[in-house]
Length: 100
Image (spheres, rainbow, N blue to C red):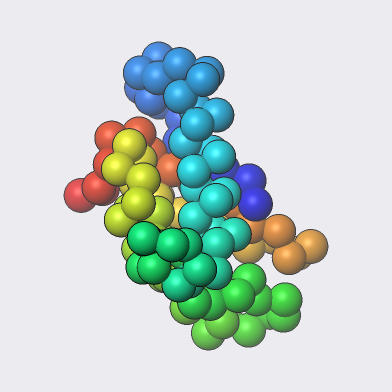
């Protein structure tokens, strides 16, 4: 999974170390199975990354990913989830938490 930062003011608003920290956190959230973290059983995803082109599966995964990232990573809000042909996912985030 690749975390992509929305262009604009945010590049100046955070350091490279903070960008790496946020990317690491988003990847951890996305790669954690729901209910497997001791003392934080609500963390993670119930959906697995869709390996086919089912729009329903992609939508369910993206919805759960957006909700999980916005619950566990308060520094950014998810602007978009992009599914590429090779079953890779890009998560476009915007600095500053919840989006309007």
